[in-house]
Length: 102
Ligand SMILES: N[C@@H](CCC(=O)N[C@@H](CS)C(=O)NCC(=O)O)C(=O)O
Ligand code: FES
Image (cartoon, rainbow, N blue to C red; front, top):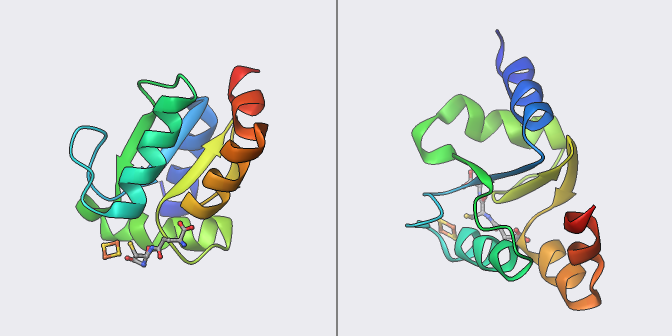
């Protein structure tokens, strides 16, 4: 399977996916740490996470997949939502909680 197909498979088979640096227990970047904290604040304790530091193809592949240049990247129900700034804004407006409840 090529990388784009692999990413599609991951985001379509898990309702909430966070591509991040490190994992939920040990985020290896502040932006990824913030993304995890926001998900937890929304009641998502166990998001499916993919550590891009362990896979260079995925690290570059998700940027192409979403046409978004950075990590973290949140996907809900197969759809790209945004990075940590967008997550923060959506959390503050209550939009993210709504999205994750559905
Ligand atoms: N403002 C961004 C911050 C994320 C960011 O700047 N990520 C950088 C540093 S961790 C990145 O992914 N760089 C490309 C890379 O490391 O492959 C957001 O909203 O998520
Ligand atoms: S790893 Fe340096 S800012 Fe994320």
